[in-house]
Length: 394
Image (cartoon, rainbow, N blue to C red; front, side, top):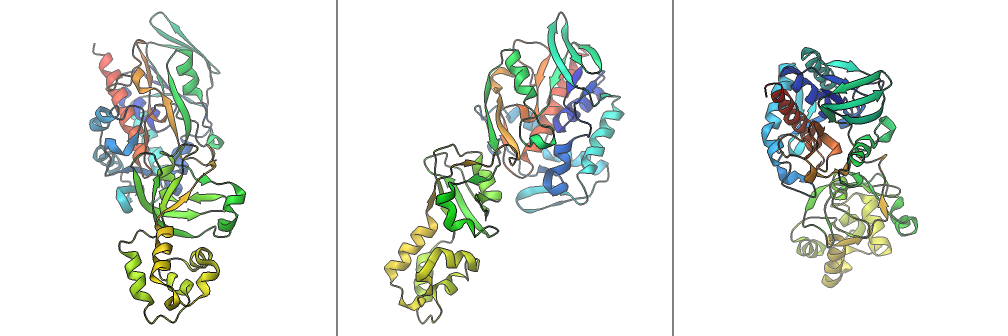
């Protein structure tokens, strides 16, 4: 069998199938192994999340990922990581990171492939793929390769600067497989420069906010949000960006505190400070001064209850209209991809094309920020690898 793509899903598939008795050739065009793993998690690789569930994934077919995720859990991958003595820690919301470096995960996966006697062809460019009697024929920079089974695990189009391409989508199209329109996901959102001008100088200010898409899915996130020169970023924005579509507004609660209006009304009694000073107890000073403007220079005690309630309404229901995303170069992953309707939900094999498989980010399954996409890569790689190993026993 041949696996094209030596990333998270590809190496996991190759190692699993090889350990199960298959002869595996792993092909990749890059000169450096697994660059996306290398740069992930700030160089420490957020390799999974202990809270993984199907509800943490977006797809045209939300139920598709259930079987694969159940077949290889975060605990299974943690067991593998522990077996290599890799130290890790949990950040907030179940996110697991290496204590030292993402290089440890790459080395682990390479060792797993070597133990399974996987043959490497890297760097090796695939120039053509043909379906032949009994399998597939690949024209590559290393010569012609033939195999009964072919796995496409070349990922998505996000972060092209480290070698990401649309190879998987082109192969799908070649074989008549439907592709859900790819788009940037887990990506900063940008705004019209003229609209954003009053907020541009807040670049670098971060606060916790509750964020949702107006008129979109009911999904909302309460996480940190970061002001930038061109728009908004931070974990909360990256999360909601996967649900956002052009033309939709965001509803942002900049101070998700219950009873805020009454709290401020009670606080104004006897208050001698300016309103911006009072609000600085809740917000970074720059944001408080910008939001209140000249009215922030008035003593807070002079504000009417009505004015305070109006302020809280503005703060807790800030409606903004992004003009677009920061694009694939800034996106963490690609959403969309190979239509899951074309794939077997247990094995990732293409229905009607025996021996052809698509895995990982190339498939229309996109996880939340925080290790979910890596878990999909591990799980889809294992599911496919097990299925391919079983074919040797058929």
